[in-house]
Image 1 (cartoon, one colour):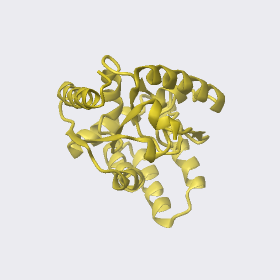
Image 2 (cartoon, one colour):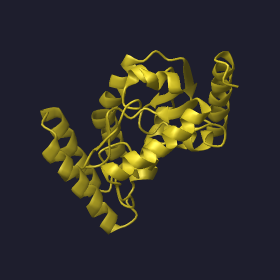
Image 3 (cartoon, rainbow, N blue to C red):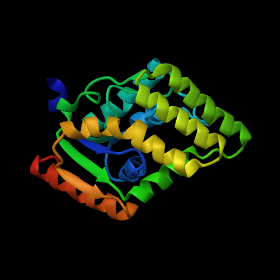
Length: 224
């Protein structure tokens, strides 16, 4: 397929809350990045359009993505966080190829992090600042209940709603990670062979490791 010939794709993989988004932001200083979440104005998950984000339409999303893709093709490569085939909140945005298809990813970079860091990052993102945000959070999980059918997922959602009602956000974050996110993340991880694994405790150090790795690969391919 001509996609592969147009550019090398470096994919970032990892659990929700491992800091992939922060790493991607930093990498923009050095490399062409295709930022799928930014193009959709949403975070990857079902809570993607929580609180402050107004998710873009499919048309807007594709237009912004195309622009970033064309810039990357000029350079011959890009770094992208793998999101699967869809992204977004209740309304899903379809991610076009090559970014939605693992076969176009040339290098896989897996981001790991200490469990506690992961939970704290989830908390920082989801924690409601006031009672109005708390209501929004609760309504998101109630909506999610209408979309899921597996009994164990519905049970997890009841548990999460109960914990949010009691303002026990830490425990809620643990259940969200273990029961809702982990399986989704493991699915894509099982399909890729890690060319690099980064244990993300220090953002700057992680970015430095990835930057060196990408530059080395680009030299091998004669791009730099």
